[in-house]
Length: 102
Image (cartoon, rainbow, N blue to C red):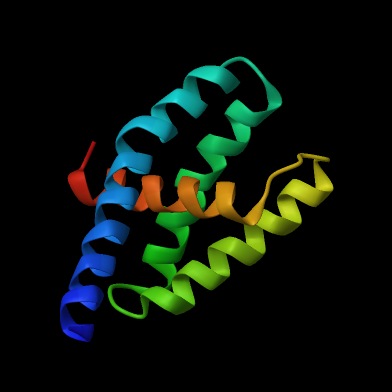
């Protein structure tokens, strides 16, 4: 019984991540176009590329932590209010975009 619940929970998490990446991220991007957040979103992609080039493939947790630390400090310096969850979504979106080669 617990295996079934675990698989159901895993499926739910996967579907949630897909829905957030597919619908919420583009919506958020359209809402911030032309604002100070637009530059920050571009910086997220650059930071993800920087971490990939600096560390290379593998060690995803280390790269993610480097990007989170860098972007958190940048947001504080530029007085951009962003939650950890929003930052997480932006980073995951940048990683997905980079993997797809878009």
